[in-house]
Image (cartoon, rainbow, N blue to C red):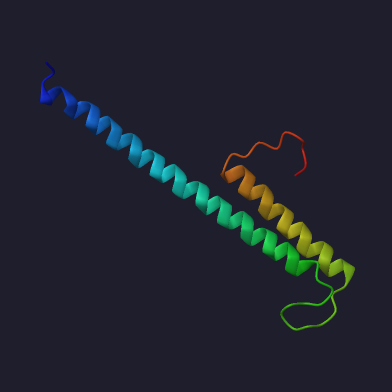
Amino acid sequence: MKKKGAQKPKIKLKQQELEQNEKNLSEIREGQEKYSNGLRKVSEIIHPFSTKDSKPQTSTQVESLLEEQAQNFENIANIYEINDSKARL
């Protein structure tokens, strides 16, 4: 027969694991949100007219904004340790 006191360290360990898993999940969701926002931003950038003032965008403006967004994606990949095995960034 096992003593109840022997279960306390296991329970504490499982609680710590659960807390760590919840923290990891929160970080993953934060990264997903940043990535989704980045995709939305790209969609706005490539639109022929500015979503802010409805003026036509030049290719230079679009290129500059896309470069900024590419850097943002690269930062997300670095922060969340996403491996770029195909060297696309």
